[in-house]
Every structure is written in structure tokens, then in C-alpha cells.
Length: 407
Image (tube, rainbow, N blue to C red; front, side):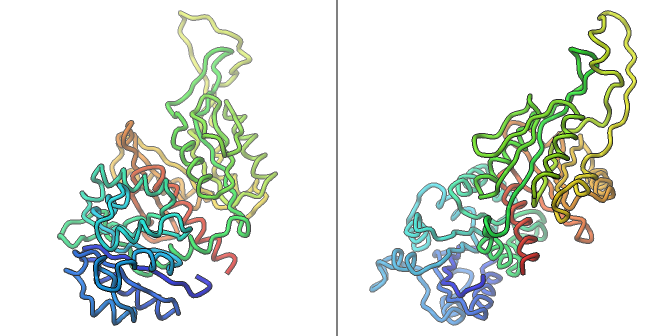
């Protein structure tokens, strides 16, 4: 954040409250004004005296305290941004369902519609993070424009290991600053997303294809468009298309995809290319030139390998600093085999980030993604539950790099 801000920290009951207090110290050190609002359960983990001593202001935790009955409005008018941290599953679900029964929830609603950026930093047990109501509430809040930060994965206070761990304070501050300082018109923010599957002709009427519907790439295009990116979607004619918003280019075969992909990146300055299309590794020799072959007879196909498009995107790009995100799909792979498949994609040298998913984890109501970065050693891995979470994480990653370039 380039100028001093009024930050309202809203805390709910979690063992992570102790770690979250360092946010107050760091923000104050940087010259920001910080005030704290707490749920009753937060007071079981960290005391009023600690929070008041760090922030220099009285804590707001009682909507009926004498002289403070209008603080849920006054503090909302004072704040430049709201940060709910740590944010429990209980608080997330209250925010999403309009429950205002304490200082924090009434304050959250009192700030609504004022144009104040609102951030949620989750902290909870893995099962609570994956509870269906919590997942639905997170998706709803993101649709309303709330910035829900991801969780970390590791040791939990209960002794288990998994997702739901609160991010480290330094990461929280970095992510919040990246979102606040991102200005699409000043920094660009133009993305090309490919999607759907190629169809390689065997003859004039038959083809070899795959099961890709293009749903993920279409949803990703919608989500990035809603978040302010200028989006072009390059997708198969047969695929699910994005809703009105992203620019659309269509393809059918590998050759058409290759031609239109390279033409797009060479003609326009894209900051990010997301290669989510299911690209054929092989194409039948002859194809449509064979006319319509007779049925009922044995058929032998000669297949020629296709080049890896993702490895050549940067060399064709008008923007030599373009960042490329690849997708790797496996089918029932072990964790070790999946990581090896991701490593092979990185080895091609054309990708900065890899999104991995597995066929066994995809159905109508569930679609998990794992995000890998070769820049970390070992590769950074994060697990995301849906496309909205994926879009938010990819945007945060892209913005952080764009901010580094303009620093």
C-alpha cells in the first residue's frame, strides 16, 4: 500500500488469533491506523488489553456498550479496508447468509456498499474448510466481490495435517497489497485462455477427439473478466463457451488452434496465457483428404505426433515477458506420478505455473485443482476446490509479478 490507510481488523475465535496480532504491529509500523473488532469467541484466545495496546485504540466487541451503539456505522465510515482475520467457518457462513448478531457481523454489513475492499483470511480445521456450507459461502462471497484469501496446508492446531491453516502474516500483507495496488488500466491485465478439445479428422465425417467440455476454461474466463482482466477466450467450437464479456475466437482442429493461438499472441500484448485446451498429441495422416471411408472393414490409422504448443507460446509472443500457465490432467495417478507429470511439463521450459487435476476428482459437484510453481524448491503446491478459487489465486499470482515489474 503506497499511502497510509485506515485498516479495520475483524477477528473471530481461532487459535490463529495469536498469530494475527502481528498484523497489527506490522501495519502500525508501516504508518497505517488500525482498529480491531472482535467476536465474543475471539476474546477467549487473545485479550482486549493486548489488542488495544498494539493498535492504540479501544476494541469494538459489544454493539450495546455505552457510547458505542453506532460504532458499526462509524467504524465502517472510517475504514479504508476491512480484513476479517482469522475468519472462522462460523463467521464466513454468517457473512454469506446475512446474519448480523454481534459487533463483527453488524460492522461487516454496515460497511457493505461503501466501496471498501473487504478481505477474508480463513483459519479452521480441514473438514470445516471443506464443509459444503462453507464452500458455498466462500463462492457466494467471492461472487459479491469479497476477496477470500487461500488457506495454507500443513500442521493444524488440533494435531492433524491438511488445508485450513491461516496464511503467515507476511503472505497476508503481500496478497492484500497486491490486490489493492492492482490497477488494470495502468498495468495491463490482458489474458488469453484456451479451452475445449481438438478434433482431428480421420476422414471427411469422422474424427478423433477427447472428453474435454471446456467448462473449466469458460468459467475461468468469466471469473477473470469479472475481476477486471481483459480476457480473450480461444476455444473449441463444440466446447462450453464463456458468458457475454470475454472476446471469443474458435477453433476445431490442432492446426487451427496452433494457427490462431500463435496469431493472437503475436498480434496482441498479452500479460498472461492460460493454456487449458485439451490438445491432441497425435493427428491422423491424410485426414479429410481421404473423403468418406467405407464402414464395416478393418481400419488402420497412421498417427503423426503434434508439437507441444505450450513450449512455443513465449517465442511467438509480442510480449517477451508473457507468463504462461499450463494444465496437466492425469487419470487416477498417485501423488508421486502426478508430480512427475507436472515436472515433465516444467522441463519443456515454456511454462511458469502448472494447474494439475485428476479425472477421479472431477464430477458435477466437485472439481479440485492443485497449483504448482517450479520457482519454489520443492515445487509449491496448493489445493483449490473450484474455478472461483483458482481464478482468484491465478490473479493474485499474476498481479504480484506485475507489481514487481513496476516497482
